[in-house]
Image (tube, rainbow, N blue to C red; front, side, top):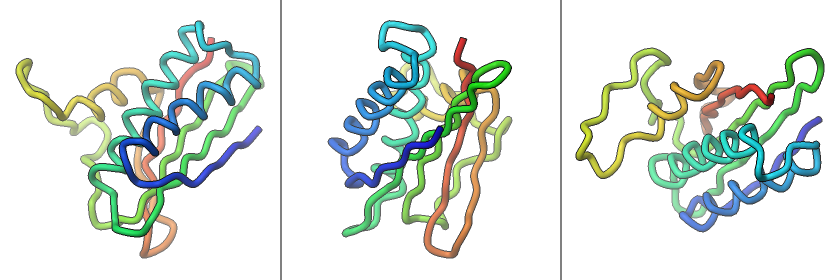
Length: 137
């Protein structure tokens, strides 16, 4: 099952991405009060916030894509595509530690801690996609 939506590269767009993910997971059988939905919502929020903060290009949107793989051990693939291909995050396993008193910088550390796998992809010279996969138990 697939879902995709384009959203403004703003804090409001990032918040709406989280709400869209919660709603779609509910439609697919994972209500908002489940650990799987809460974890997926957190990961969407982090990736969408990064797109709105670091991937923003005036006049361009970001895209949220969700793919449910229900067979076997259900997984959700989250993809957030933004307009800044030159701004790549560190590679998986290379996310620097965050100071306890830091006010930001925890997003990818959370993705790395909670996702089964994550990475980046670039399909064209105008965008980049940061993706992660989460187990839905």
